[in-house]
Length: 222
Image 1 (cartoon, rainbow, N blue to C red):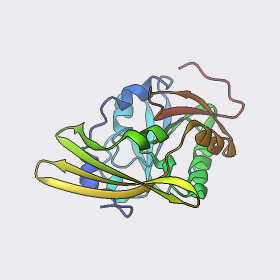
Image 2 (cartoon, rainbow, N blue to C red):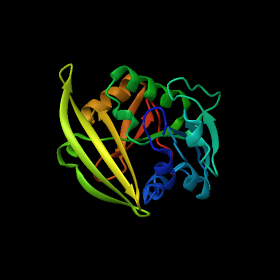
Image 3 (tube, rainbow, N blue to C red):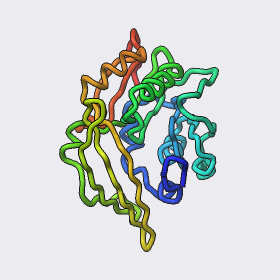
Image 4 (cartoon, helix red, strand yellow):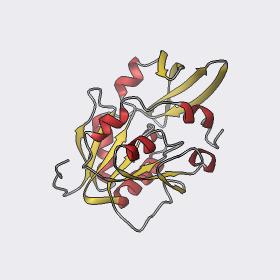
């Protein structure tokens, strides 16, 4: 278990599903990618297999020990400052939904610092629609199921969601609880703007995956 309560064994077993294909549709060929909060390499390793060059960043050495193909860097996202730029920076796992606004701004500042002037930042978020409709049992693949219970809460006038997810794989069971801050388009756009980024387009129909660009960027053909 990581310091923030993520079960390493679960994340090492969890399949990527169709996410690498979705990401690939937004990436140039043979892209350099910085995967922030990469965990056990669930997305980083398939992206390497697809021909990209990936650096996986996580603060958990145990998580990074499960990464097989990507290069790894052990660091918090907020403190990371590598001396290079990337074609794409990936902030997945709904990390942008952290309830602390200042921490969210630091995460996005790291994205902005590392993305090339004509590059792309790809973000996975919980939307306000998700907060209203999600919950129940989901088949995650590879024999893993999840049961999600959501409870609305609030802090400083903001609407938050308290979530408890129970995961099952065979006779093994893990439970993880967290508080998240769903972001609508206006809220996300405002946070991106503070970091010197702009919302470019949605990559998924439900708006959970979005692409952002550095302010002033002219989109590169992928």
